Image 1: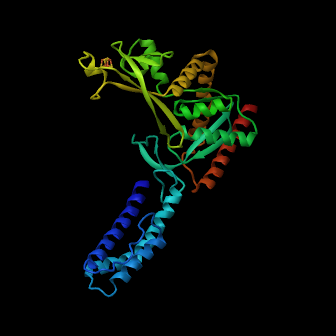
Image 2 (image 1 turned 120 degrees about the horizontal axis):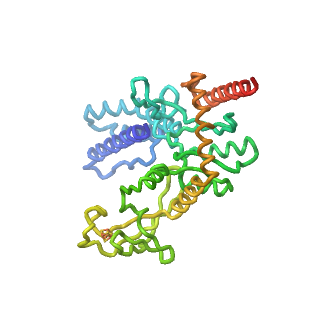
Image 3 (image 1 turned 135 degrees about the horizontal axis):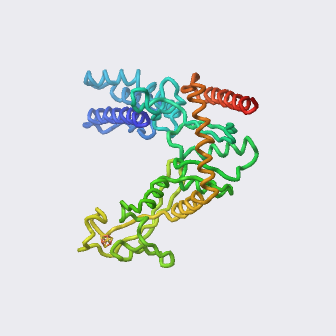
Length: 357
Ligand code: SF4
């Protein structure tokens, strides 16, 4: 959607430029060429003004009938089309897609249908905090990835309860550098898995190492800030690069390079690059992951992990299976938020009733 809006706007911009090139051709033999319109950052008014300018420039000239037709079409349609694209862009925000039937909803891959097909449907990403299977806070996100929802969800919780939780347990979908840092900044003890946490554990158990050349497997000397490649060759620091996540969070990667890979017998299986091997390491994330691993494997961590399965997952299970609530009835994020609030209340009341029965 984001791409198609951009493409449609670019197409209009391109056609305006082509029409202006036609004007330039018509005026090729004349000294006085009309002023060139501003084609940057087009909006409906600018498009209208440009078409008018082109019409005026061609007023007393012999003009190709196709160009005349195009100008008539442009005058009638392009300003309103650009206004429509701008409005769609505003509604879309940073999202990649939105539904025509509910512009607040984003297309997300839903769980399989009865025919075992993955479904791409408009929806909201529901986040919930629970305590003893009671929903204590929920939020709706318009992004498909859980990673970017944690900070907003947490801020909503803090606003509602005027306090910060002491601990937070979440699954691997939330284990990003940005989230680990936010939790650390708020002094929250995080029991948050990262990608491959489970895979790592399985590998450790089976003593299977399928990626012996992976940067995580290379020896690192913190004092000299040097990695050692599988052949024992030092890989020295050669600089750093920064990248921004979709939320604007800045990550820093340190780069290390082997001095000479030429003639190395492991060359074919070690790396594919033409020159000497370069690795990029995000030390901050590595430290966060190390801390997360220690916590998750601790006695307290194991208790939290076990609890998470019957704590929050059971709540979603109850809502979906027992209450048979699988799709929203309303449209628009505000209305859906209210609808989910009612569902959460129904779940909590039911739970309260059952616990007292
Ligand atoms: S290819 Fe380069 S980085 Fe890889 S093991 Fe050989 S010398 Fe080390």
